[in-house]
Length: 471
Image (cartoon, rainbow, N blue to C red; front, side):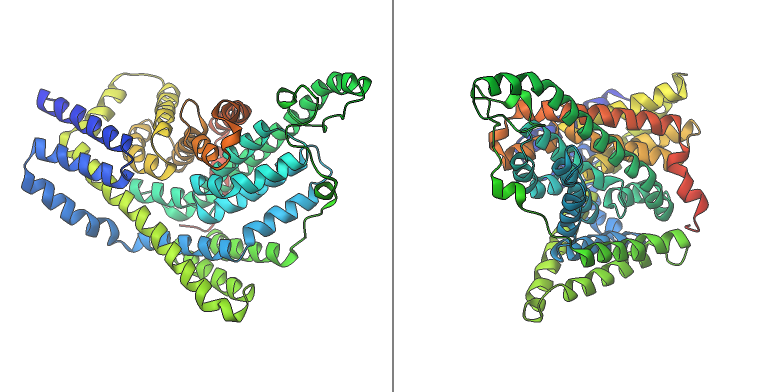
């Protein structure tokens, strides 16, 4: 690269980070920074032309219709209270399991993340409800913070996932197999998180046994089993004691809600697996099924208002997603024109390093991005850069995609500035960032284990796409 290109790149990055620091929307920040780079390397006319043409060139694609359809399906499902149905059913089924409320919260977060496709939105929505339920059961707020923040990341792999669709679009990978490939890693992540919760609760109970014995000897009330020992005060009482009414209250079992969730999954993802429908057709089927379910579960006088609210929310989420894509398109154009993308690929390939060393280095590069960006923004920026590098080493494209998406979402809970932690702190300010990050730490370890397993056993990713009829 020439000196002029290096100066332009440094200037663009400084401007981009500066605009993020003043809380300008990520899409606009990418667009302005990319346009500035084009001005520095070409001309103002070229930058204006790129900014003017990018919205049309980004949106005018039949493939991208799957995004608003999946968003609409998710909004309909949430407003039909299907995520609540999954949470309530899990709460009832897991009531006697160690850490049952935390496991139920994990399940609820997984359902909500899957239907919304947004980790940050899931944390913001589930934080207060899940935390109250976990604390009332006698567990510590560190466990609640870890469960909610980590649970929000489940939506990136569990289809229908908007981030998987975006990765497929920006890299040219087939959308159908990409969605199916996320199922195995998603289930593995859920299992790893669930085992982490059970281990934390059992270890917490064992550590608390001496505390309970001393409290009993002094005739003070004993803390509930499973609460965080670090959060037991001088009196020995749990940080938020559970009332008898809260303990006896049983969540309702919404059988129809669970059946409707299964219907939406089968209609939207099952048809892709069987080769009956393309991803776009499957998304339209899913959106229609979710609309019918919303009407069934809503009283007729509210039909018009709830549909209007759902459409308004879906339009807003779709516009935000496409704004990110337009901004990322301008930024990517600058990187491509400046030769940065090609130079990066050539530099890594010419370094003659082990393919797996390159893979791990590329994945580690994603973690700092979680300090500034959400999952969608990370994928739109990083995928066009990392995908060509890893593909050049002969790695399977869909497997690369799942690893990149998984680590990108993992970055949202990684210290020092995991975005999910700050969103949770805003919703539950009494938690404190220190306790939130300590609560998240065991789940980060679980994520590292999952990524290692996916690298060592790629069949977990490729099994369903290979045996499906999806194209």
